[in-house]
Image (cartoon, rainbow, N blue to C red; front, top):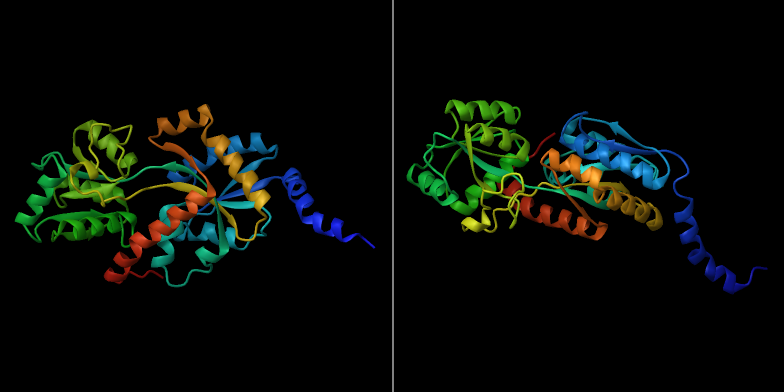
Length: 320
């Protein structure tokens, strides 16, 4: 008979042993968007550096479709052993569950946050010909012309539309929304004069600002300015501290994955994000590297859900 003392000690001994055993074979990192996009550009340098830390290949698998939901479904159906984990952004993990009627998974139940890797935010942009240079000036213009200004949305239910709705609610303005199939056609119409402003990311904003065709009048990423456009003040600096539309990217595993394995993945992501080579790649793309742990990621998911849920419910937005 095994002594009771030994039985009680077994779980304690198993935890470090499990952490030491993982991984023993290649790991799959599922990205829910096509190769070459913003998600892929974050996932691949991190996967490469994680391979070095963990001593096993971390292989990126792109499963694009349904605004990231197909990739998450792969993770939801995987074994909770750490050998499959997924890349997410805040829209995929916190906003999609509020929008889509028939998701094949439950985001709160089926996933375990692992770590955040990057942070960012959206820019409020107007064509250079529009005679406004600050957020208060734009609000004054919109209030003087109710229903006459148009906003270019990257799509129904997109984070750009939700950002607009947040702005409209906080500023008390009446502005029409024009939906497009992505940011590029919306930009063309803004440059052509059909819409008077957009809200979008650094990848769209910086080239247009540098060319002089577009003026970025506010950064909506929080209290810090974006390092690639440091002359653009934040919305908080301009009297709208609650106009915050963050854009972060991170990683989740299957719920039920043992804590030592989640910790091993978290630590490998931390080492990757803090690696100077990875940071140089991100900085060159306008991506802000910032590691944050599992607890912080879980909190941010809750905050994102709390921000967007009343807006989505008020608008009656539901997608199939």
